[in-house]
Length: 410
Image (cartoon, rainbow, N blue to C red; front, side, top):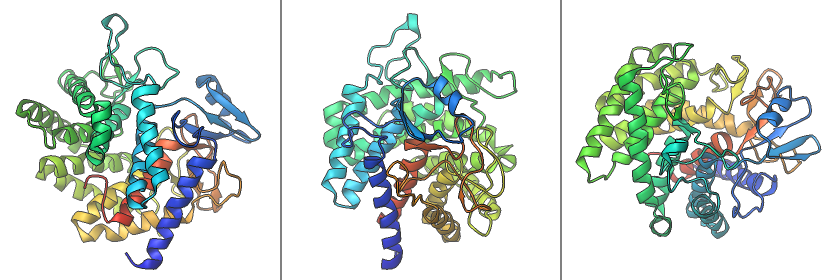
């Protein structure tokens, strides 16, 4: 990467790290008590009352609020980002913040179920969705990120792995994720709206890659370097079953779901040398690249967000597409342009508002026609939601990895 481009990427990354520290989403700013789910803009946000009703842990400010629930997946993503920045930027403060976030997850938050209880349908080794939920509430997508990032952080920092028994807990979670995924694929339960789902303790529309492909990602990572051949065989079988199931509808998926599916396919390729999965990833990458507009954007189509070809969706689409294109570009140079266009678009719209609650962040949606944040709001998606994980951490992870010449799976 040439020096001028490197500076642009580094400045964007530095700006987002400052946002995490200065915005109020992570108090104290050293990460010892974790990071909140999101900042929600209150002025003009048509979904704000539903957000307040649904998530009672909220700190109100003038024109915005912090949705304070500590989600395990958001904290894992933020921890990985800060540890990565500590290495790439040689920044001791970032490294310590990452360490604090990991300590919060394992020692302070109570999010890791270390006991389990059949009467309450609690499952040992899983991570509760947030610290304000006191019953089992497991999602395939969130648990998949917790599994993947436990293993990646353990690889990156063996000292943290030893301190918190990370490999032990990841092994238990992998088995539970496989058990739930295998059950869905075998029983093929259908929800009222025709989606494949698990009717037990787990939640998610498994036939959509948002849930199913991320489960594949976590299970594939759990296979890498695993000496237990029985587990590798079972996990691989579940991944193969899902990818075979989804292959029939892959071409008709919306942009968001195709981006998620690339993550699952590329994980199967990198960690299991699955050539069919890689071929599917190439096909999906070409479809997505052909859908990019002149700005590098992919149409916002996700059902939880406003939709439109002129809208940049940073919760469900462009964040994951950027990571997917980055992976593909390291395997095949034909995707370099798609990756660069996606990352350059994302950097170009980074929030420059001077107020610390916004400066350096990426909000949930940008309106290209109006050249500003906008497009509408929803309960989960839209411009008024500024997520710590799922938006800001993954985008900055992509930028940090680009500076290092790597991607999420290498």
